Amino acid sequence: MFESSLKQLGDALRANKISSVELTQSYLDRITRHNPALNAFITLNPEMSLAQARAADARIAAGKADALTGIPIAQKDIFCAKGWLTTCGSKMLHNFVSPYDAHVISQFNNAGAINLGKTNMDEFAMGSSNETSHYGAVKNPWDTTRVPGGSSGGTAAAVAARLCAAATGTDTGGSIRQPAALCGISGLKPTYGVCSRYGMIAFASSLDQAGPMGRSAEDLALMLNVMAGFDERDSTSLQRDKEDYARDLNKPLTGLRIGLPKEFFAEGMGSDVAKAVEAAIAEYKKLGATIVDISLPNSKLSVPVYYVLAPAEASSNLSRFDGVRYGYRAPEYSDLADMYEKSRAQGFGAEVKRRIMIGTYVLSHGYYDAYYLQAQKIRRLIAQDFTEAYKQCDVIMGPTSPSTAFKLGEKGDDPVQMYLSDIYTIAVNLAGLPGMSIPCGFGANDMPVGLQIIGNYFDEARMLNVAHQFQQATDWHSRAPKL
Ligand code: GLN
Image (cartoon, rainbow, N blue to C red):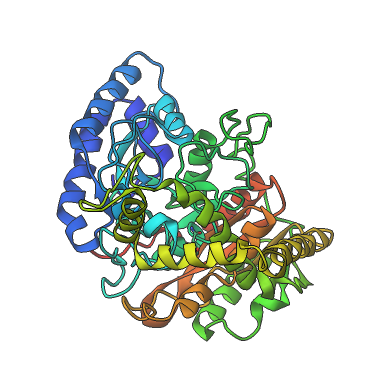
């Protein structure tokens, strides 16, 4: 049952082979057994999960079930969910029980899915290893001395360890794809604007995007069908017709043109990662694809550009955490200014403070033109590279992460080394394009390797087709860690 796909679970529920209450309880039991070693969840609320499961069973009995009705889905703790503690991995929100649902959460509720719990994450989604969480590091289920990646590390570990059927993540610079790669699961960051950001705690608003994480491309398609859609409460939500993201899963790949950017296959990528990615490309050739050499000349600037723009937006977004409106307030202070200062000094962790300082610096008078404005211009050039590339190819492929999962603590003292974990993923966010990662083998220390698939705007259905066909021909995605 823990290996069943979302489709199989949905079929079993609708055929009354299992009830949602039974299914939810089995997952909760499995979490009780294995989560202490992984720390993948910040909050569990069995009472609320089981109440949803009872409602789902009634809906199924009434013949009104949708694809995900009754299926337990875990939610990254960045999504506000009514009645649930919603911390965003921060002490700042240690006591924040959300009075409302994020759009993505209400879409799952409308679909009758079960909220199984809130997953651990880097504080305010800033990090690549899940070590910045106020609630402690998440462990990689393939080797608990290693990181799961971040910032959606709790989600990635939970899916890999089969502690939920599927889960949500968010991706500002790689936070869905990189942890998916490091934990050997599939994850998709949609085109910017496809999933509403309403109720998703903001990090860098022009880059943040929600997306599904799961065991297979087919599961991601069913998840995205629920998550995507216009929402007037997010001014960047796109008004487009509803799509069935599973519609093209079974199309053959004959004639597919895969672009390989020379910049992604240069120095920097581990030889173990290169070997697995090259084997995957060879598999695609067998499936009928042709290879096109392309260049993304400005992509090398994506890490410095991102680390100007993302902190700039974060410094503005995080100004709302002032100890007054919600969240943490310092117990002792002399006056209002002192209360702000102490609440923020005590409520935020080191990485968040570093970003706020960089952000206020690059936005300040005198440095704005030199840093922020320049970065915006290069952002445009990075996006134009992709537009040029898609004249020659249908999808772009490469590694998701330069290395497999590193040791806990290994990069803790060196923020720049940590920032380089996202060297292949960040350009995609700067351009607003959809990107995904699927497992494609194992590298050093038998840790999973991810293949990144980057699509053109709104090409999610094709990317899922490309991933699904690979998963029909290989079994990397069905490998699971021994717990
Ligand atoms: N690791 C990157 C960062 O620390 C990306 C995080 C994300 O995508 N949320 O900012």
